[in-house]
Amino acid sequence: MNLFRNVVFIAAIAGLVAGVVLACMQAYATVPLILKAEVFEQAEGGHNHAAAPAAPADAAGGNAMNSAAPAATTAPAEEEEGWAPADGFERFAFSVAANIVTGIGFALVLVAVSEFAGGIGSWRQGVFWGLAGFAVFTLAPGLGLPPELPAMPAADLMQRQIWWVATVIATAIGLALIAFRTSALLTILAVVLIVAPHIVGAPQPENFESPIPEGLHHQFVVAVTLTNLVFWLVLGAVVGVVRGRFTGTATSLRDSFA
Amino acid sequence: MNTASVSLGASVSSQSRFMQLVLTAFLGMFVVGVVGFSHIDAVHNAAHDYRHSMAFPCH
Image 1 (cartoon, helix red, strand yellow):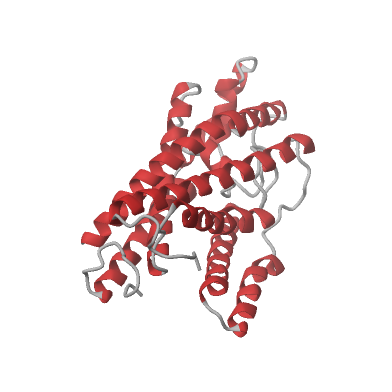
Image 2 (image 1 turned 30 degrees about the horizontal axis):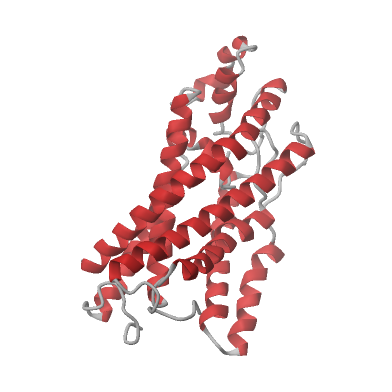
């Protein structure tokens, strides 16, 4: 299990670095917008998604955060509430932990897949692999299911998750076919694979009425997309650097990424 | 696959190499799946801001 150990080691370092970077960016760029949205959510009386019965999370966050509405904490919705981190430091700490853990998760996938293609030999190749990761995990699913703020209308959670996963898989296979196969037929198949999920269409909510102002949501979409872009670029680049040190052949491993 | 390039753990057989890489990829997807997609309330609440910030489908 030598290879396994090496991959996990590289992924752990890269995921840690990229996760910390992402957590810092989120603290300034996205989390303030989420907190703002929760104020709107509170103002309209907590959750009202018909399609999402098990959605008590941000009701708690909003309640605790919005000290002007302490009465709301006794709302009936509170009964099905699971444990949630307290607002402030605890909530921030869990976000950081989630960033690092999933950063390592994404890094494991990135390193494993790239090893099949010869491995990420330098930070520059890593940047290209990072772009691919960004396209697969953020751009493609984000077209059909844009980043959403709390209290925004959305379709059934399970259906959205299935569409999200299917889109990620189809886009990943499509990009791999374009990058690593030379036949025109396979390239056409790749384009079909990438486009298909969007022709099927992402699950949409029954009505689009939202208490969240359009401007706030747009700001959030931009913030999420850009923070994810930086995350993937950092992740790929760090994998390239660490792997280069590991194998001792930092630059001459492969000349091109494809 | 690993004839021309220096690869991690190049000494292992190609079948073992394949299995280890697949295993690693699945481990990664499992980790992301639990943190980002689990329906367990406590997990959802703990990673709530993260899920929104990553544009994962959330409640």
